[in-house]
Every structure is written in structure tokens, then in C-alpha cells.
Length: 123
Length: 271
Image (cartoon, rainbow over all chains, first blue to last red; front, side, top):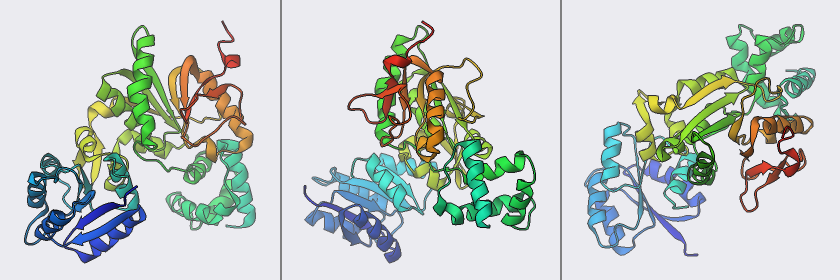
């Protein structure tokens, strides 16, 4: 089986590090991006299997990235999990309707991430 | 806590709850009992246990027992089983019942995630169900009945879509919507007690409960489940759990780990 890849998009280096440790533990090969533009250019080169996506980031936020990604050829393929501190139900619904496969409220732990990734069929 | 205290705790857990408190659990016991001691007005765990040993097992004893049970649970644990329940078991049993009603028991429900997961499956498929959720721990039963879950608990096993459909946010917590909460009835029950009424169920979920029990007590508990299950009912255990050493009343369903039906020898002695 091919190695599964995961792109972690978050402007916090600490969050990226924590998330990286968890998804590497689940067998993913991990890349990182600090904002939506970086993430888009990464996806133009190599479309990952899974994207963990923060909402509020400088340069380009997560929601804008997601809409652009889904409009890109092949951009419907990655499973996208929003991972943000935003917990208002209407914001969660907004993220889902923009094309996110699931939504994780921070803070999360490895059990939550594992369970969310199983629920979308990524592990 | 002294070794003698721990030995007595082990005996208490085995005799009252059928629970096997492993020898390696002394630190865990100390840690779990500290808040109980504070709540009950004792300065230390040892002082509380000292009092406990001089009295018959009453509310203090049960508070101690509850704190030492294994409360680990999450939504849709062993998720495939919930799909089996919703898409296979429920329609098959509902068809076989004249009123279409399926009676379900979540035995050892802890804080209720399993029972609510079952209720979501039933409500999503429009099946008419009655779900009873029981646990030995009164505190767990009350938590389940409240339907309030932390952000950690609600995310463990539930997709965000399911969460939004069935739960409302209240501050940092998530609360079951009335339609979901009303689908589950919670009650305290000790699986060690023999059935005293005629309630029977079509499906019994008793997962990750027997594995923590004293092997000497497991057979008795499984026999109690058998008496509570209708002849064409299904017993659901954790996918890795086995009971072939404890009972001849059930046989596993081939190729379906976790599913058990009554063995021919256990069918309707009354018939």
C-alpha cells in the first residue's frame, strides 16, 4: 500500500508539531504549511490524502483555502478536517458546507483525531 | 492506603460488583478514592476506609465501589457494530415484531455514549425502539441522564455533522437534544442481581464489561443476560470479547465478531 500523506495547515508551529506527532503515529507522511497560500502551492505539487486545516491564519484563512482547493482539479480528493478553536455551531456548519469532511474543535488529543480520521475513512 | 486496605477493597469489589480489581491497581485506587474521601468529608483515603470497614456496606461503600469501576467509553466505540445495529439488526428484528418495536438494553452503559449512539442509529433509520441504559454507578447514570458531554467526549467517536444534528452547545459543553434524550431511559442496576421482573430485550449490548469482571462471577452475569434476552434476540459484546469459557447459553455468530445468539440448549425452556 502507498504511504498516505497528510498536510498540516496551521500558523502555530506548536500546533503543527503536536498534530504531526499524532498523525505520524497513525502512519502518515506529514508536510506542513503556515497559511492557505502555502498550502495551495503545496497541493499544486502534491495532492495529500488528508489535510488538517486551521481556520484563522494570516495571508489566507482556512475557509478561503478550502473553497479554492475544492475548485481545483483533483482538489475534491483529500479528506479535509478543520481543526480550530471555533466552536459555534453555525461556524462549524459553515465549514462543513464549504466542503470540509469533518471538524475538530481544539484542543484535541490523539484519540479524537484518530476517531475523526476513522470516521471519514482516512485510517 | 495499606496493603490490607487494598486487599479488602479487592474483596469488596469482587463480592458486590463482580469486579476484578487487579493487584497493580493500588495507585489507581488511591488516586480515584481521594476525591471520594474529600466529598464524604474525610481528611484522607485511609480515614475513609477505616470508617468503611467498621460499617455495613451502605452509601459510603457504594460511593467507593463506583469510583473504582472502569468508566471508559466513547461514542460509537467499535464503530462497525453500530452500523450493523442500525442497518441489519434493527430492520430484521422490527420486521419480526408485530408492533415493530425493538427493545434494547445497554448493560453497563457508563456515562451513556453507547446508549445515545444506539438511539441515533434508531432515530436515523426511523425504527421504533425502547432503549434502557443501566450502570452500577449512580453517578454515571446521572451523567448519562443529564446528556451533557465535554468537547473531548463529544468529539470522540462522533462526526461534526452528527454532533450538530443531535446536540446543542451550552458554554463549553454539548447537550443532547430532547428527541435524543427522550429515546433513552437510564436506571441504576447491578448485573450481579438476578432478574426480578419480566422485562425482556431483543438486543443486549454489554460491551467491555465482562472483561473487567472476576472470572468466578462472569458466568452468573452472562446467565442473567441470557434470561433477559428473548429467544431470537442478539447479545452484543466488544469485538474482541469471548464468553465461551463462561457459558454454554450463547454461541457466537459466525464471521460476526461480537455478535452472539442463544445456543439451542438455552432456547425457551418454558415452551
